[in-house]
Image 1 (spheres, rainbow, N blue to C red):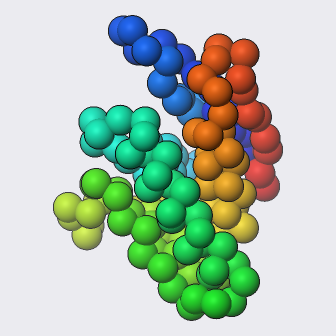
Image 2: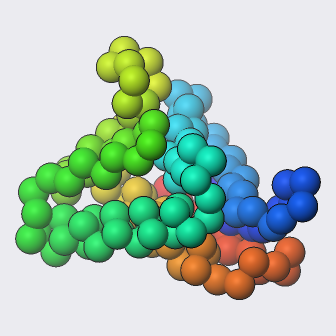
Image 3: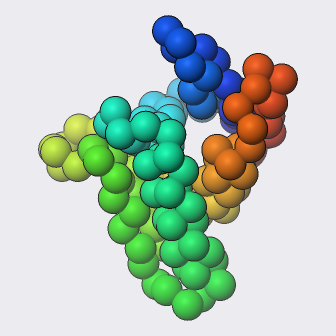
Length: 130
């Protein structure tokens, strides 16, 4: 999976964007919905939500927590050391996808760093995950 974080213009402002490519046939890419889960509340809200969530994800990584439900405005992630379930909070039957904790951790860690960078068309983070 190739992931690129970049800044793009919406009508007026630079906003964070995600370009994700995967060779996996069953991959839905719901992590993108989860990462951009501000529901119109803006960049400062998104930065704070991701930063606070990453603190708890780090606790799972260190074994201080067995489970963390990182709920946003519409999307959530049930985080455990063995697996992460990305889900849409308004229906249990649609919009779910599993991923490894290691992949999720790396994706959120890099997104957190990216969101706290200076918005610029030249500011890009790109990485590969297996």
